[in-house]
Length: 419
Image 1 (cartoon, rainbow, N blue to C red):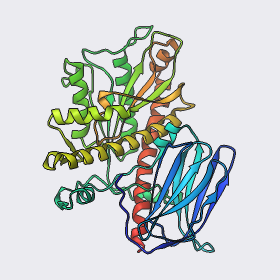
Image 2 (cartoon, rainbow, N blue to C red):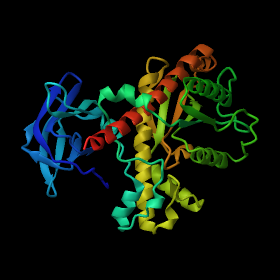
Image 3 (cartoon, rainbow, N blue to C red):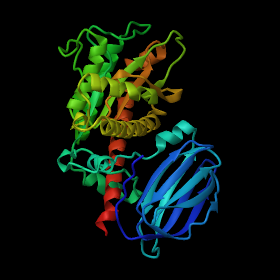
Image 4 (cartoon, rainbow, N blue to C red):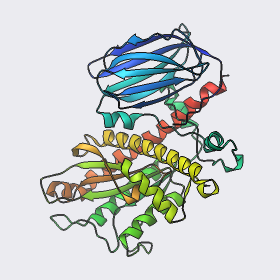
């Protein structure tokens, strides 16, 4: 992983503290001075987190942990940097990371990592996105970074925020977010059919229109539908080509988020509930292969064919890793908001090799709203009350996702502004 840090004054580590409870643990790094840091991790053992500090002085002796944490140890990285390795005693995922700045009576900075119990898949999905500036990556890989190739839409590494930034982050949000909604199936492809004769293409279209109206009413969004009716002239005969068109449409629209709506079906009519799919790790190689074969080997409007194959592959993989992390982040937000609003499968977050999710630079999920093969779920899919409640939860999730992204950008810029 390529990791970039801002340059600032050295911070001094004062202490590492823990706040355990039944199902959660808080880690607090007490630091004198604004720390420049990045968080990553892996699933070795019960799981590990790495907190890389760009410039850190002070005591860095290992500490025995509490709650989910077995221990925190430190190792020097270069002349000034340090890596804190957090080993888990019980696997957890990151709920939130934020930096609390000094306040009257408290002179230190506090870097806080909140953990909650989860499996290893949850841990990996919760790791912060690493979205380094493409021009800087090219410079590291080739030693020759053409500034004019830096895309406007890509940002520096995301660092989650302090809660106090929430209100100002939304108030200062300048750009409109582009959300592409894909009503699954349509035209010659009706999708699955329920016991009462309901077609999947119909309920996905109705739900998409409801969600579009909700987002437009809230403001701040440009909403694009991949189809607007079953007679939409853009729907083409080949299902494979149609899925490719929908993915390409999202990229051409400059989508900040893509959500595909479907209604699942199975031969066991008792099964019901919603689930959310993101792209599986195994599908990433297919994404690159398709992009190359179709002459669309680019990310964030950067034509990767202008670089040698090694650099191009690094940049494509980097964008794809970031996109998958963001997709998982939105999936978790969506599942949390849907819970209690509609029945959910026990394992709600799933991964699959889904053509419509293959864009390497657009965070994307596929929402199976319900099982159309289940009579109760089919009735829900046709219910205006259920649809309003469920699409309201989806709209809330979209709001929360972009609010979090905005807070992260604010938090990233804040330390640099104070130096």
